[in-house]
Each structure stands twice: as structure tokens, then as C-alpha cells.
Length: 312
Image 1 (tube, rainbow, N blue to C red):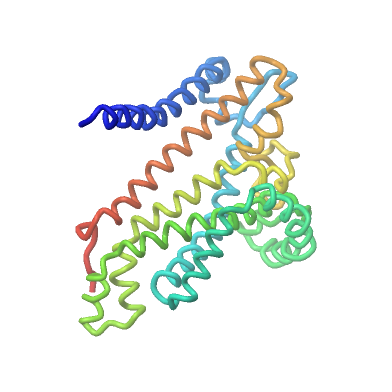
Image 2 (tube, rainbow, N blue to C red):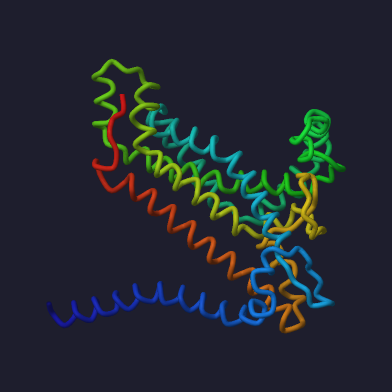
């Protein structure tokens, strides 16, 4: 190896090493700033919903609840649509249509989150407040158990609207990753079923989807990870006016990310600042775990033919 090659290899190695080192540095800095709140509140920080900066009592349970509810709603809506769209692109669409749909899906991923937030605030929220939310309340409100999700006034800036916005935002992620996973399924899977006389749908349901299910699960988890961390659009439509845990989806609330965005500049006390950083640390660790798990699941499909088999 010549001198130039050695220099280039050294520079490339250093740049590659900088990525994990940067992540470690971020985690360590967040841990250092979060330490006072962790020492003071312990696990109660995640189980207590009291958030009172004046009394210096901090608990992020309500924020965590809002995060889980909105992310679950987003996944419930975007999951079937995204996987269905990926199936259409990978298995059914002709080449000309496939390129157009793929372009439109990828285009959705490039739209800034603040644009989604503005659209949600000025268009979606009024429509939800005057149309869909009253319908859901009148239809499902009287029902036992499920009715608890649709009680209270329809305000249009609540957990439900935030969940719908998140669903639109994670749809490109779920679709794109699912599409690549389906494309990674070997043609021998399809050919084996077709040779047995299977129809197109039988081939997909009994050969393609079983082979790709791990990767599709990874796509859903990647979408969930993005939903958990989305900030600006959610902050604009979730209401940001309640720290109580309520079952109703019509309740204004917070997510972990929107709580950081709303209160970071107001943290004028050391323990208040530490509590905000603790939220950020929790969010980062959860996102890292979900992304690692998702990548492993996607890799299990894309690594080669040995990952699955035809199931007749």
C-alpha cells in the first residue's frame, strides 16, 4: 500500500470512528446533566405525573403516556397502509406506475415537519374538531370500555390529531423499508409457489410475507422510532395544556419530545434543567434500542436466501 493509500485509509478510519464516538459523547453528556434529577427522583420520575417547576416536583409519566398513545395511534394507522402500499409497489404495480408511486412516497419523507404541523393546525385540526371527532364521540362514546377513548369535548388539538399527523409522517418510512424488504425476498420463493399452481395472492400470503415478516416488523419499529421522537409537528397540534393521564383521545396533552420543545427555554433552575435533560436521555435511549432492533430484523431478511423458506 502506497503512502497516499495509507493516508486516505487513516482519514477514512478516523471519520468512521467519529460517528460512534459522537453518539457516545452525546449519551455521556446527557447522563451527566440528567444525574441530579435521577438521583433526586429515581424511577419515580417515570411513574409520577406531577410536574410542578415551582415546587421542584417532576415526573414525566404523563408525557410518556402521551408519547405512547400518539405513537401507537400512528402505527395503527400507518402500519397497514404502508405495508399495503409496499406490497402494491413490489408485487402488483407495472414499472411505470411503480416509479411514480415510489417517487411520491419518497417525496413525503422530504417534507419538513413544520409543514406537516402547519397543515395539521390549520386544515386537519378544524376538520377533526367539526367532523370526525363528533362522529367518533356519537358512534363509540356510548359503548362500554371503548367509549372511554371518545369522551369529552372535541377540541381539535389533542392526542388523536397528533396521532393522525404522526401516521402521515411515518408512512414513508414504513412503506420504503417494507418495499425494500419485499424486494429482498428471493424469486425462488415466488417461483416455488407458482410451480405448485398457487395464485398471485397465495404466493404473496404463503411465500413472500412469511419470509419478509421479520423485516416488515423492523419497518414498523423504525416508523415507531420516528414517531416517538417527532417534535415540531406534534407540538403544534397536541394542545400542550394538560399533564393529567386520561383515557380520552380528545384530551390535549404532551409527548416527551413536545415537553422538551415547550419547556427547555423556561428551565431556569438547575433541577428543572436536569429534569428536561432526563426526558431527552430517556427518549434517546429508547430510540437507539428501537432502531437497533429494527435494523436487526430488516437484516435478517436481506442477508440472503437462508433467512426463510416457502410455506405451502
